[in-house]
Image (cartoon, rainbow, N blue to C red; front, side, top):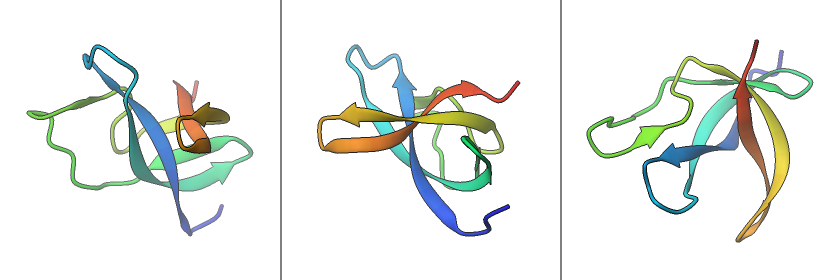
Length: 75
């Protein structure tokens, strides 16, 4: 497991348009990352996947380039 933190992107829900939040995560295996504990105000925004969740990521083209995006929770 890679102990270094990486930036991945998580969708914000209930925004009306596609909005992606950069979050800190640790690499677990292949395309799986663990979203680490970090400030998250649920009164302001709703992340598709919150801290403590293992997610499967894939590269996706966003407005500023290609980034790793969380696409599903690890089964």
